[in-house]
Length: 108
Image 1 (tube, one colour):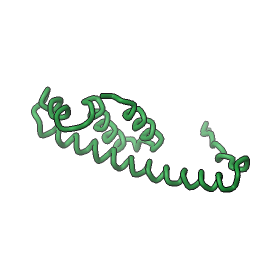
Image 2: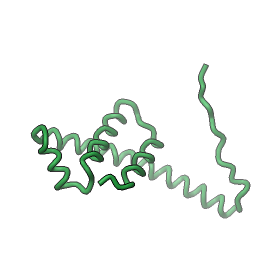
Image 3: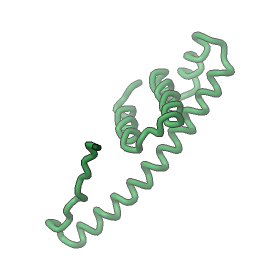
């Protein structure tokens, strides 16, 4: 037997109709952006993986990231792990949003 819990959708009935419509539209746009973000994050990770493979092991990759990208080495590694993880496990979009918020929190 499965322990899957299905959450009911948000109840918009307590809101003014115009507000409810606006929030539904914004939610739909956000879902689209999140899906696009997933594709972008995978592409970033795949590119960093390809670059790392062309550099000598060790500090050369670290120095390249520090000089060429506006992110920390830790975040670059996170993009790589995300791309690999998504290919292997199909990481859910909700994880992407949380990861992006964490990354934008100022890792550098």
